[in-house]
Image 1 (cartoon, rainbow, N blue to C red):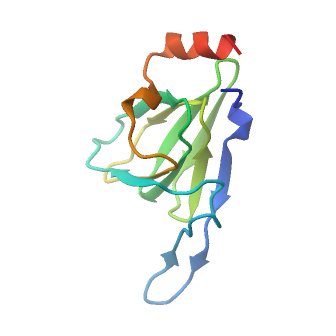
Image 2 (image 1 turned 60 degrees about the horizontal axis):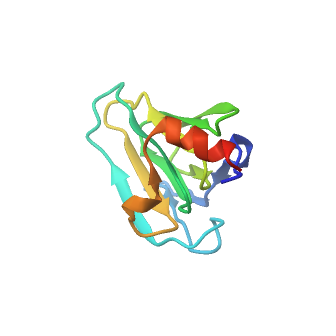
Length: 138
């Protein structure tokens, strides 16, 4: 869990422009620094609300605002960093060991999450004090 907020990377995805509408895609092992094992999305979040507020022991995540916008507050127990996601061809890679909170969703926003691991409750760190203690043990 030695990750720093500065290891969180904003990654541009391919964008194919067309007068009838644009297309963006993600190819496993090419566009992301991990294999995709799970895909999920957050939606119908009331404007201004927040989600997330947890870290992972092993799972990498890649977040994309496929519609609307939201901010991601990143914390490594020493530094914080905020990243605004508001374009469907830009995403944020969050490695394990980073506390992430998705904040200030615009009305109608959709957050797509690509994850390196299948769901495993034991991989989640849901208490911020536990997270800080684990980071300090390293």
